[in-house]
Image 1 (tube, rainbow, N blue to C red):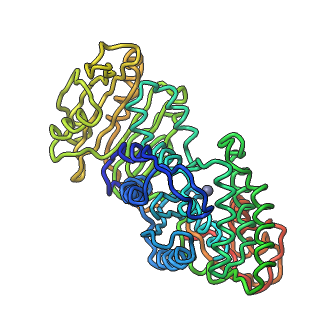
Image 2 (cartoon, rainbow, N blue to C red):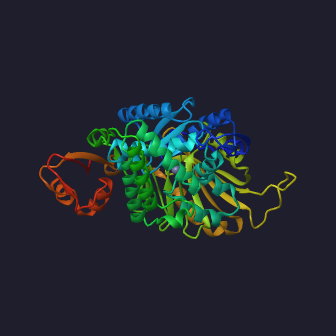
Length: 489
Ligand SMILES: [Zn+2]
């Protein structure tokens, strides 16, 4: 959580995706139904951008940013739609992914930037993402998926199906945005080969990166079929893309660059994994060093931290809590904003003090709206929300405890103890916690990757992760003078 941005939902974006028309596909040249005009596509990208930033944050690294701008614009120029207002961003997420929004917005996570081992791998993925834009792969598909993520917590509050959402929330953790059809992915892989080759990169490296993706998914226990039955297996993609790259280079002989060392030097110092300064969970507490607060996390609960909010849910999915920044300058203004944002009917409302901080406690219900817009009588689907608004450090924070009305009483004590556990943090061990970073080292001798990592004092329990990051096996050979990735501060 960075709290730079207020929490917000974008229903307009999904609605915009419904506008359909017929036009010629810029890549295939075939007439086809598209979901929006080019103007709408551009507007969609511009509208979605703020909520992507709110969910993930922008990763602050000028050199890397200018690198992706330069390569992105070079590729945009040779693409099938050079006239779109392309924009390229690195988002501050440890998840390994890249994604595109219609209209020319392309995002890479710092997680994927840390995993590339040369410019050619990056260029292949860049081409793949630009391909989704230029081939106008159903804008609706991608946006609904993105907003499935962004709107996750809002969905949990607004939906009567708390239980179902609890399970979805779990599934969504770490699996951003992968929602294209198998055919679209295959088509984008081919475009990725063409575009990256056209700006001078060796597309065989893109094939190798699918090997890295395969290792990551295997390690995380997220074998492909369980998370997206429509998504192509990275192993298959590796074979297919390798073949396409060879065909391209045979048809267009020339020099194709890899640029390994140049890339590795660019990512020297990149943050790896979660950044503790944006909040972390330890010993059943959520700590936020840069905002200097903490609160308890019930044991066994699932949680997810993003720049805009921290959410957590019981394993059975029957209750969840959401922590976020509240709107308004006073507790009363904040309460009114909450009531309006979620369509709540207040049942109880009182002022309080929580660990010395002024607070307002509110219990309310979210009753389903009937077809005539009238609130229906409270039913089994009625959601009850306990809200604690707490004034602290110049901000007002909102802690919501959410359950079905019939289940609320059983969870009220748990919600209360979390909210009442909100307090300042002063322990320097928490406040000064630093993220792990990738540090590029030079091999001092001919050896295996394992030996090189041991020479660089890397701990045994990190060697497997480092092998994946280096795109190698621990038994692979490194030669004296070769660069490789290590962990450092
Ligand atoms: Zn894709």
